[in-house]
Image: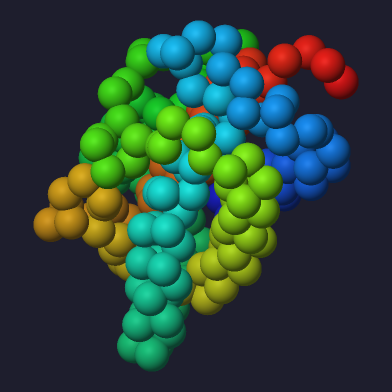
Length: 185
């Protein structure tokens, strides 16, 4: 399915940046903050890891359950109105700038000084998990499998929308992290 192929390519890009660029940086570069009001790259990674800790197990559980019900894949994914709204809200513009600033929920605000190496290692692990889940998702119906959202678990997005939201969210915060890293490369 084209959607899963695109999301896999995008996730591989995130993983490549983390492994080939950011692992080579000194921890101080990942911890640098332009101002007290702006997150460091390590804080951006921790924020993404917080979401990954919720969504990755939820996705894995939903895919496993769908597989047991013999949920068959479909040729085309159709985004739901709520999922599309969240994805469009999160996705950066083509020039890399954000459409709107957003305040993170309290449970997703990173620590003031997270361990940059630990945050990067967890982020890399999560991207590898995401690639496995994208592969596993090819065997289920992305329109029927539903994932509860972190801020309101009674709301459930289609699996395809959840993947789209997660990659837009990751892209958003990797751009933010990139801007936070001092130019010492």
